[in-house]
Image (cartoon, rainbow, N blue to C red):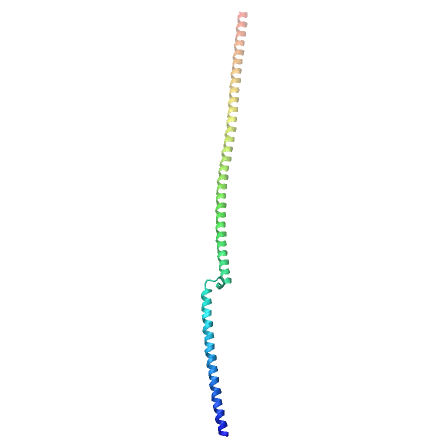
Length: 162
């Protein structure tokens, strides 16, 4: 009976091992099917989501946009600064030219003033000379008349004495 019991036990162990192996094999096949199904689903979703905006690294995209904007602002600031510098230089050149012209005008005005003053002085001198010449002429005429009077008086005095 012991032998029979051992034999039955060994058959039962073998049956249990076979059932365990079948279950293990079934679990393994099921797990493989689940993994394959999961892979298929993942592939389908990755194909669907390729063009999705959610697949983009938004932080990196934001950083790239910020960097582009920063560079654009720097370029714009540099361009504006150069434009302001050019404008200031042009304004300075115009101002320098205007002040130089103004200086020339001031010089010309001063020269004209001096010329007018000299002309006035020359005219005054000419007038004085004319006046002096006229006065000299008048004095000479007076002296001649005086001389003539004296000569006439002398002739008359001689004519009366004779």
